Amino acid sequence: MAQVQREAVDQVLAEWVEPSLGRSLADAGAVRDVRVDGDAVTVDLHLGFPVERYRERLQQALAAAVRDGTGAARVTVNVDWSIAAREVQATLKPLEGIRNIVAVASAKGGVGKSTTAANLALALAQEGARVGVLDADIYGPSQPRMLGVQGAKPESPDGKTIKPLENHGLQIMSIGFLVEEQTPMVWRGPMVTQALTQLLTETRWEDLDYLIVDLPPGTGDIQLTLSQRVPVSGAVIVTTPQDIALLDARKGLKMFQKVNVPVLGVVENMSIHICSQCGHEEHVFGEGGGDRLAREEGVDVLGTLPLDIHIREQADGGRPSVVADPEGRIAELYREAALRMAAHLSLQDQVSSSRFPNIQVDDD
Image 1: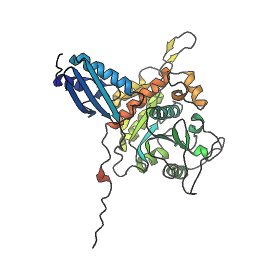
Image 2 (image 1 turned 30 degrees about the vertical axis):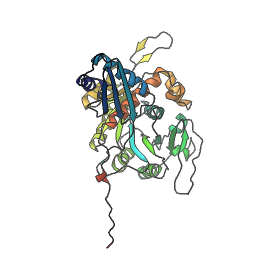
Image 3 (image 1 turned 45 degrees about the horizontal axis):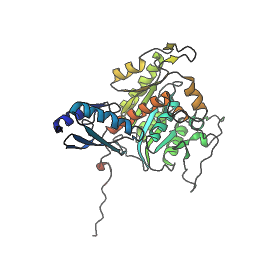
Image 4 (image 1 turned 180 degrees about the vertical axis):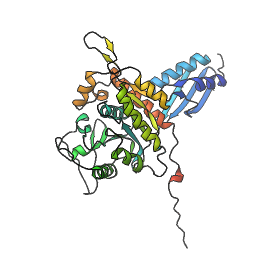
């Protein structure tokens, strides 16, 4: 029986890049313990993002890497995870009941932002996280229909706060629950920002790991309110490869950078169209735009999604791709993007206890 060298195990852990984190497990501080007993190796990992579905694949991939790199006969990889509140804007602190708020923005309409927000939220929930969705598009709320709860009315147990609706394992709040679906919201900016603030703070969110906020297009009142008054841990920018969409996406990205909200990455929608009849592939909206934007702005591409009729049909039917076809390729692409988003967020500093006042009571 050959003795495995601990140094060889450490070298594998220092060099093997975990796909979601984009760096080695050692660099990410995810290695809790390594034990070597003859030709057997045990590695304990602790991750800061949810991995219930992904856990087995991660264990198998890392075990194979350790075997190949050390000659170990038996490799056991144990993976657990927990989600901590991450740092937000300097003058704010996390809201009660919500560890992390992630804004999903596009700055341009029609690029699939709301569909992306819904599927990212569902993917995180499938990985074991407690997730909520706040539909911040006051003028055009779409999450009630996408998440299959249109026409439902939330309850207010005390006349002051509202219980979010639940479906597909998500807690959901939208102005669309409080007005008729076909009623236009003819409101000026101050009313819109007040409505957003109330929806966020007067909803009885229950112990959320992530609140995904589906922002309306643009960089106006709602976006500024979110970035200045709401403790946001990170933002995701949604775009298509089209040049005109990239122009607006860049504006949204720079807006978050200006207010010190970390941009976790870019999701490129409609990256390629594959003909359902003949299989011909065509870049209808251009090629490589999301990669170019991410590279120029120093952020990562979280995922690329095809132009596929099923994504639209499933969202319109109230069962987005991640729940409509959880084992399908499109759901897998959304899950990979969600894992990268959560993994990138986990690399940020945790909320410091110094953010909160230290209250002391003297007997004098």
